[in-house]
Image (cartoon, rainbow, N blue to C red; front, side, top):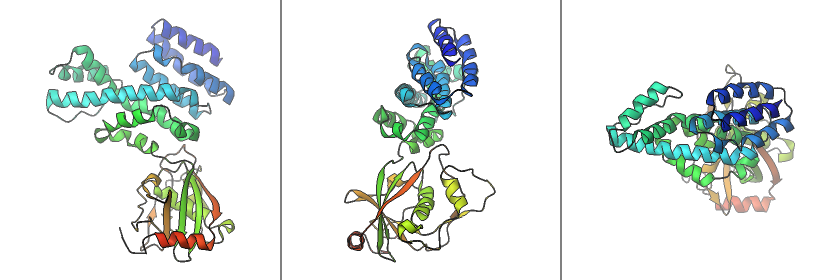
Length: 351
């Protein structure tokens, strides 16, 4: 069934028939609901060849279909390159829109409105007060309005696949293109954060009070709220030599920070300790693991007692991304002492 619908989609693209193309998309998605993983992956592999056959606005809807098929269980790797390339194209044009808008109007760029022909026409009209042709103005305005829609499937596949995150094609170009618009597009901050997610990252975790140390490997963690909770869980079991014995986080907190449901009315998570980096500066929960500086090739987290009670809402920033915090080994006492001797003493740098 999926193959037949994909044939129809390709034919509509070759015939330059957008109405038929858009009519097939929901039928294909409906059929995908009951498809097995191999069929979904095969469909994604075929869809990747469609992007070069369709224009910008149609490609945005095709990208949403790719994200949906990946969320249903298809392997997103075959569509990562076209999705990233298309998004980079759009973001570069969106950056051009912002610059042209300021030149033509002297104003801040407007809030984008998706799929509103009248808004696109009126906005492009104002751009043509500058040196742009009507065709150029429409192209830039379309990119500005479609940037978030284009970003959605990339955000989906980045959450779903550590393999895609590890080897994202066109990553540097995408980061550069995103940088041209990020200050003006807070709706793209979610994407910017995903591009900074660490996988298979080694942490040295030191418990200053006891002198113990641990080597931990993390991946798929969206922010330091999540890291805080999952470190407390990983280092409170018997395999961690009882570092946090008696203060293991509530299992509901751990489930909501991994892949469990998040109850909006659940009690807040309570902080178990104060995270400090090797330079003695606090590691703020609002930050990300990628912000933690390295020392001798490893990111170092020092666990100190909390200076005051901290709490936050349970959950995770990226709901489809499965995090991992794995205790690789307990450091021998001598190695832990060596690491502790390298870090700034407690209170040495503060906030």
